Length: 124
Image (cartoon, rainbow, N blue to C red; front, side):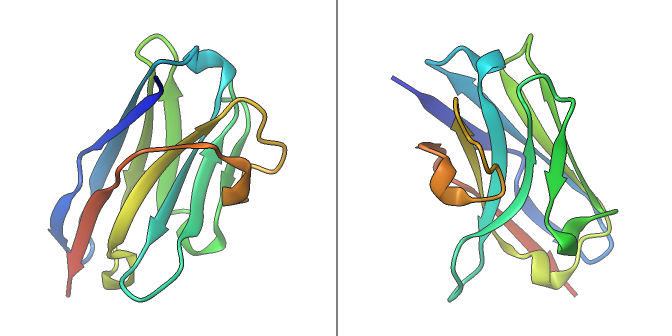
């Protein structure tokens, strides 16, 4: 079965950095578009970033452009989210998502496989 396991979350002060990883199994990883979404307390889950199968196209929410970078290593079945210049408002549970046919990779309804999430807490 498909498994997506996030790691790398934690607590950091504002201005700090974290790198999230998502290890995929049960899929042919190189054939899947991958995405990161987040959900803050009391808010709906929202798009953060996505990357195409070969990694040649990336997509970002406006609020992370210039601060976050999504990348993937198809030899390791892993997608990454490098988060720099973190702000308290970045505090959320971050979810990894995968889909083989995501036509609109900024839309969470396009993704059918999800990880359990990784908590990121940014203090001021």
